[in-house]
Image 1 (cartoon, one colour):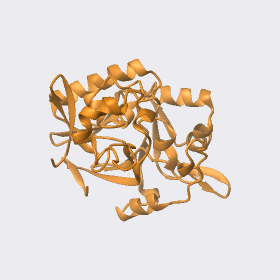
Image 2 (cartoon, helix red, strand yellow):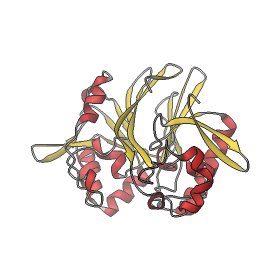
Image 3 (cartoon, helix red, strand yellow):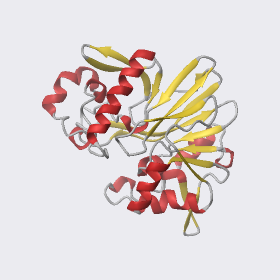
Length: 286
């Protein structure tokens, strides 16, 4: 997608993985072939692979260079991580994501902040790297911004994601726990968007009269714009996720702000528009 300008803020997408991921019903239980049939003319082939029948997902970070800071929003799957439920992610050795970050002129030492929209494994993987048998922060000079509610839930669960991706950041003194209305400055702030997780947040970018919002896992696939009532099977609270998603879609439809998604296929950004009694996602450039 190249470089996106939000006023004076520059945004780039750093892709780790993109391609067919899971069957639609493994994402949204309601996404059966019968229910998807009315949408196939626009859903496939871009967002649903006609050969495999799987939804096409992108796993990427957003590199944000504001007038003051270099920021990464979400850090994908990472390397050497324990992901036994999904073999392609388990103990990955592909470090191309770091090379792609370097190709954009950014070394790990130059990152000022890492924002986590939530603390699931595919959004926190490059928070840490394995060095001499121990997990250390990948970005040694960065503050890692995490919603307090999500951190506390992760701490209670004490699972491998917490131990590999979160705890080492806290032990290094680089984690910053914030409320879900946290504001870094007049260009970057959070919006509480609970449902996928308790402390899930969207990230707003604003500069020179331009505005964009990064929605995290508030929605995973464009079909959830047509069906806001379809929550992901991964959601912490399905009903809360439905309510939050509809409110977000209504607001973006009204204000026309550019939406940068976490998993929609290339280019992963676009606009929310009204369609009949629901919504559609229009990719930027269409």
